[in-house]
Length: 422
Image (cartoon, rainbow, N blue to C red; front, side, top):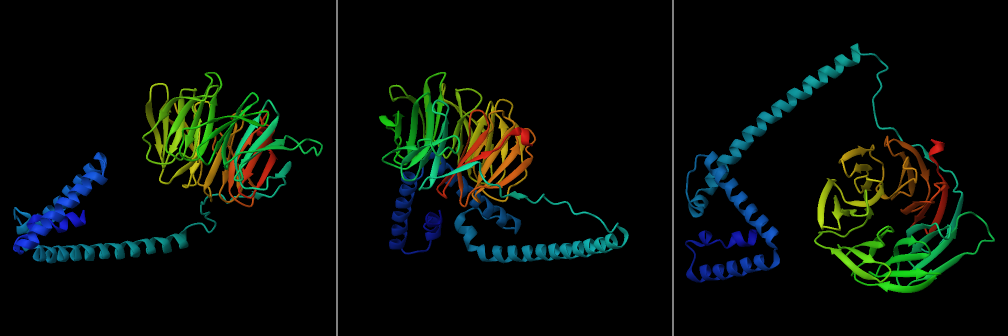
């Protein structure tokens, strides 16, 4: 914008002909670049901003008593206008300083009076400090690589995790040394997992979705161009949904690998996604916004907007929990747009999970902590020092007896967390 303004024709009045011609050529090239580089929305924003700045300039001139009608005429008087403007603002700043000084004197006097006449045991209300538990997990495994994916397989009664090294591990539920430890190696880092019956789907960093059965690669679904961050299964309709850093969501028929529908048009990579309410609506993150996409008719509903980026979602019924860089845990009832919000946490929240009963909600943090909340009240119930690095995923066993957690510290841990304990 500044470059285009610098070669405005009105600013070239009085300049030699060669200078005016060069400025005209430069102005033409800059405007052509604007048309090419900016999409329709951004061009409209540019034009609005330009009109806004010129309106401000005209308003400032009018405030100082100048009624010139052209840009060039305005610029000839700009120095006088700016001097008058600065004098006006200086006077305003002086009055503001006087007001601030008077306010400080008054507040200081009230503080002294309060010290003498108020009770001595007045309590200052502050946020409750976290009490961290350093309890040991029920059992723990060394995965040898940072872990990024986690899912419970009811059919195999195992917890599956996927790592940066491309290995999918099949962890036994329990600490039985006689149980077989199994794994399968994929060509790329594993970012997401889903399972139905004995079939496992693994989303990887290269945009592929691998279909596994009996720990063998059966098929590969191709279509994404960047890491697949989330996979959700709608078992009733035999459909699979996948979200990616390529800013798309795809619906697939997992039996054939055929794509059904692709959602495009989001401005930011999608970090998390979950079915909300029914299998027709998908809640997903779009930078600071949580949106809900009805994949059957292609409609959108923007549910909430945060001040900072969202990175984690979890769903239970038509409730969706969301968290991220803002360090505030929020729950939204999609159908009614009812909101539950917890007090701010001292760390970025990186993953979420609901207990199968819906009574508890847990979060994992950048600080390695697992935090447990009452789902209805939003009250923080427990804080566990779980890992030495970021917690990447959380998942309950179907019976709700154990909570599994994965981390960049290369471990998979199981915790005894039950609503009955709170």
